[in-house]
Length: 211
Image (tube, helix red, strand yellow):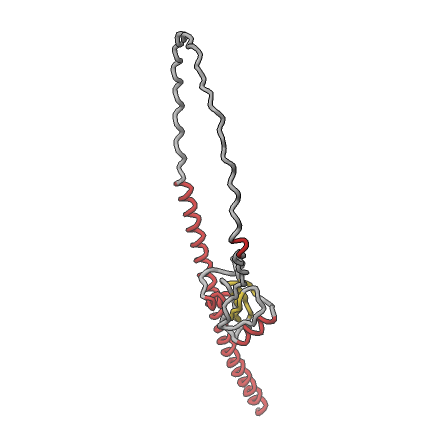
């Protein structure tokens, strides 16, 4: 018996997408994403009537519509529209040909007075300059290499975690399918055995009544 379909929705780029799939792993496979968009909060199960109706009509097909609109979901939607920006009007002829400002009157500098320096006084004997203080040793420059190495190691661990979780989700989907097939097989075998047992009991009862 096939699993019931659910409708999942995700915001990808300039579009809102919707897809009908039996599980989250199947939805991620339809989107072609190796990352767990549900864990990152980008994708989720939706009950929106418009998205559910369109997705259930085409199970497994990713439908799109421009983000932020109420347009119907489709396989090949139109590109998002860019709002028109009003153009700046050119200046009028009167503003373009404004009269030049009047020139300032010529500036007359006052006559400069020549200053006569006073007679020089005898300079006192210069005092010996104090010895310069020893300069403090320059501080060593901080090394950022350990910080960058730790940041890189953390980024590698996050990428490895995402790959591991995606692989687990894929194995879970495969195990769910295998379990479904096993249950169907055992149910069919059990029904055949129960029928044989019922036929054998009937034959046994008929044999007893003949004696």
